[in-house]
Amino acid sequence: MLPPLQIAPMSPIISIKNLSKTYATGFTALKNINLDIRAGEIFALLGPNGAGKTTLIGTICGLVGASEGTVTVGGHDITRDYRAARSMIGLVPQELHTDAWESPWSTASFSRGLFGKPKNLAHIEKVLKDLSLWDKRKSQIITLSGGMKRRVMIAKALAHEPQILFLDEPTAGVDVELRKAMWDVVRELRASGVTIILTTHYIEEAEEMADRVGVINKGEIVLVEEKAKLMQKLGRKQLKLHLQDKLTAIPASLAAHHLDLSADGGELIYTYDTKGERTGITALLNDLSSAGVRFNDLNTTQSSLEEIFVSLVHQQ
Ligand SMILES: Nc1ncnc2c1ncn2[C@@H]1O[C@H](COP(=O)(O)OP(=O)(O)OP(=O)(O)O)[C@@H](O)[C@H]1O
Ligand SMILES: [Mg+2]
Image (cartoon, rainbow, N blue to C red; front, side, top):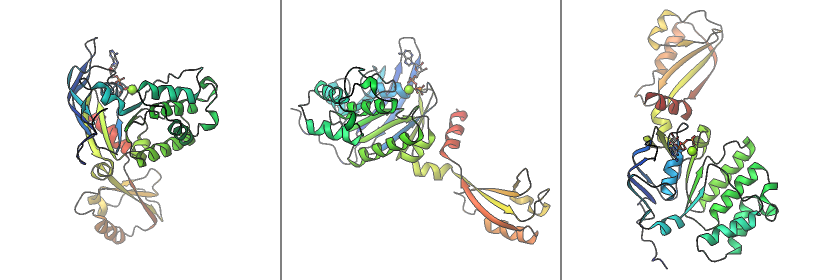
């Protein structure tokens, strides 16, 4: 038996220090990664194809050997203390490889056994029910739909009651409805205390789910930030004024506001910085009124995480 874990409340559940990975081909997929994952959070790792997301997950899970640096999981070094570290982790890999002829029930039970955990029928039952797989528990996996197979992989990853769950592109190729259902499953897991690290290409997914967002590009972590702060910090807002009468040009007296006029002349667009001390909106509205420009509606939009992400990746 292992002694109970003594982790201070604020200490990270995963700690990655100076981690680099160079594959046998000579290709360096991870460059000096430093990252802490907090217990109980949903951390979304974003990055383009080939950025190193799967390599990073594989290294933390002990499937890929690090070339340099250290990783600890719950205080256990992933190489020296592999079994203890790995038993805290559930992994749903990017590539689905389910045992076609097995049933959800047997594949989950078997996986639990692999981690040396004693049988716990009630736990397997709960996992299968939570993932809406109970009705299919005895069906051969080959007869299930793609979305169901994905949920079987999650059930398998949760069978040994891990405290950390990695989801490598959990909703790739999954329809909108099922994606929302998966998000609910992930939120419920988090509510039950599981720390979740997910990779995704769907910015919407990170925007919807994550407590923190990390962006990886060409093997380097280029940003880690609270999602809310990120949206606020990098967010620029646009104020759109729907004009009563279309304009053919922006009146000269409004030049200082750097407005844009929509192609049809029906909308004036004002872009401002939400961080700025002054948004300039009051002055703009005064000047519009003096210029005799009237509008019958207005709305604001905030730049999305998607725009932030694209600009970050292109900057590099
Ligand atoms: N076994 C390997 N041998 C050599 N190079 C590899 C190996 N596995 C991955 N790579 C390379 O490392 C880089 C990172 O790959 P990785 O799979 O981690 O990217 P990813 O961010 O998960 O991409 P995707 O979004 O497409 O899943 C890629 O350039 C890839 O070709
Ligand atoms: Mg990948």
